[in-house]
Length: 203
Image 1 (cartoon, rainbow, N blue to C red):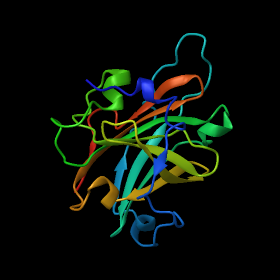
Image 2: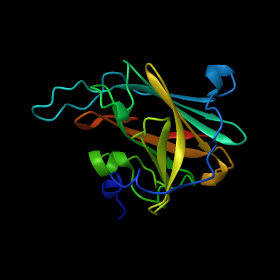
Image 3: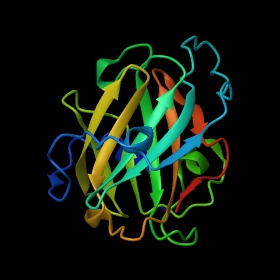
Image 4: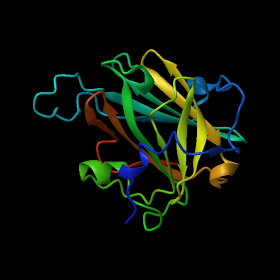
């Protein structure tokens, strides 16, 4: 069974290829800022810290998905201010966003929530985004069960971040897929599962 532990250190050493949008990340304004799908995550459901770790847990309150003809946008919202991973701040984010684009839990590999927390997201993951950015507005998306990574644009707000990538590059063309996330932080591999169990289904 494929796992992702060994790929964390390799993601920014890997060669990124084309296919991802390179323009501004902004989404056309409409309902909910252009996000057609909005999902809530319970507030206050963070996981307890390990022994001798005092850093506050990052608590997600929702995940939004926006679709245009060319791009997929995912925004994760938090209850308090966050910082990018590259800043190594006390409130820096870490973790993964997982996608099941064929909407089939029997294909792909296990979710981050299952691999790291033992919580089954009922997903077969075809691709995921590592939330470790390069400090210049780029995160990385792993291409299937390979060692290939693609650049993904990211934009941070005080209490949220948004990623954008190409629908064609992941073979998504019907607007139906599953998504979940595992949020970590400084010295915390896991602080919150989004959602707490299972997944969100975009349709």
